[in-house]
Image 1 (cartoon, rainbow, N blue to C red):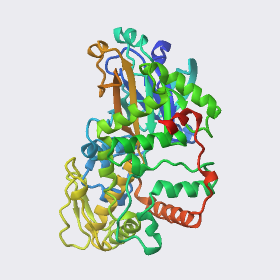
Image 2 (cartoon, one colour):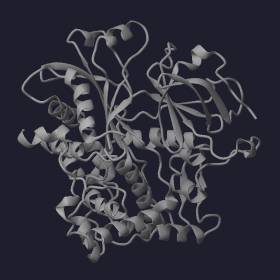
Image 3 (cartoon, helix red, strand yellow):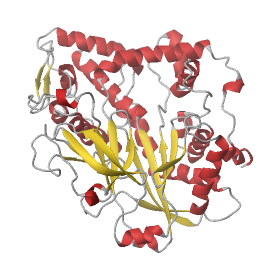
Image 4 (cartoon, helix red, strand yellow):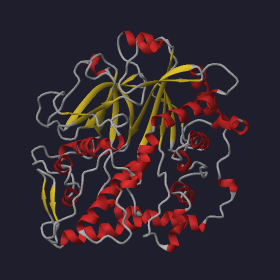
Length: 494
């Protein structure tokens, strides 16, 4: 078993805990290595008993055989032998051309920085700083690959003279938004009893199901259709609604510490959250007649509108052109095509990404996705897909769309003086003047992992449950809608 340990405590202190999900732990770099400044380290958590994991097994692709066929035009994806490699290839080769370099950072896949051990399965990090205390953290590395990504979710500080400048400034504020699906489907494959999907947005209907399941206490007034409306006023309305009922769709951080989010999950009252947020933002805006929180909401709306990230994200979401009701049929036919010709119904060359139709006929020419492909250029299917290549294209587009519907947007901003912007240069940052003050800001997409093909039946079942719940409970009493929290009550009069 191969282990690596930060034997030098000073080196370990350079990695600060930033957060974690079900599968990953994120550490942010606070040291002086120029190659690591502004980076975070995403590590896979240890799952199961370390002693039972084999270290000599031959590396095999992460994707299932049918998924290798699906993504054959992107050989790095089809050949990836770790989740880290797979997601890096997916973000770099598929999503970045669609969404742009400015907002998508696949990170640096690094297998050498941690030493010369060929396969590092576990890494022990001693003395990692967590909330100011030295803690012991044990994580698992995906084989010998780790991912460094640019730091977007905490303060924009860096070592050296720049730190001295930033110490005099207000804290860095980060807003994390889960926007969800921003359009109404128009597919002819939607059954008549489900046509409510073409008039009511998915997020609104899903709120009803979550309420019935006890996952939420109030129905949010937020509508992704407002956020993706293309107008700054529509974006502002959506942001205000998110402040009313954040749930897990809105979180705000000050220097990496969460200060505003789901009231049901935070160990704080609504009034405490109001005070905490006001204290954070009040020093970030010029004093004036406008409430600081209102000014903050307008600034976030302006930055989202200015960045044009919502338009790009919506274009990719609309790759789902026939809805899950059409895509599930493509899924079933795709698997049938594969089973009809062994092995897996198709001949795939992972060297050049070529695919041969299992029927023996020449497949349709499929161009790899690129940044010039927009909604008006999408393939429009008006009937149930039948050919192997039709099904393959529909499924691939659906999975890319699913990533775009489930990703997050992170807006990070730092108020600066008019002279300081000349002295501060941070990766991916821009400068904007708003209400008489200058801000450094970044707008970035996160949670862009590839979706699994085998989850299509789950998506289909969930869609049915959402529609059924909404149709049966469209009479929900207004008392289930979230009351206006104090921190945004001023909006009623603005």
